[in-house]
Image (cartoon, rainbow, N blue to C red; front, top):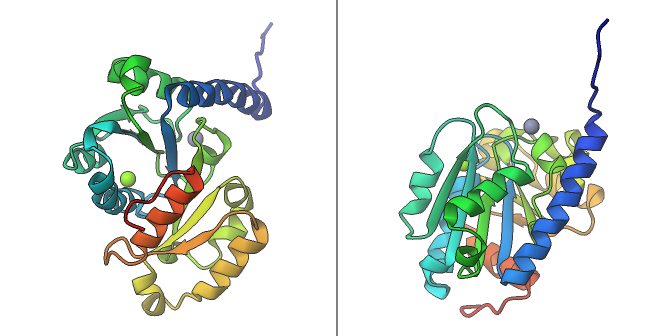
Length: 230
Ligand code: MG
Ligand code: ZN
């Protein structure tokens, strides 16, 4: 006789959502604003974060910024971020293709617990590079920021409507190479806005530093923070 314990994706997702709501309460209690960056591998999440940190660390003491990076096996991204003087924690998922609430709970422990997190003003979570399941597992962030790039294909948002729909802010990266790639950026914006009318769409080139100031001010605005250099 074979006994089976079946997990339905829907149940796992519902349980994660319950835990994510608890995390959000913790963030609010501690007074830390949380940004989560999601997107496919190579979409430029880390570079967008680096560019934002260049601006953010002028306004906010780097020691009051925490970065948690999810990666399957390396600490390459965290090493890039650590250069900005922010507190950096790398989570290696050991093969899992997205972060879940317990990963964040462990990272907070590694940071020194909620007392340490309460000293932070901003926490940045970079999810594992993956355009599908990270979007199904919220981590309680105040803003979920989708990073898509023009090289991934013009139909990115149409092909991933669920990921597009749950994002609060959509960043289209690598606009400097859109022409060379033969990508119609206006069509991408149109698709994104049709699928998710509530999310602002921002065009950037993290590599060239284009659109980053606008993105930064928008993020502060959406978080309800003052933008000192706006
Ligand atoms: Mg990265
Ligand atoms: Zn996954």
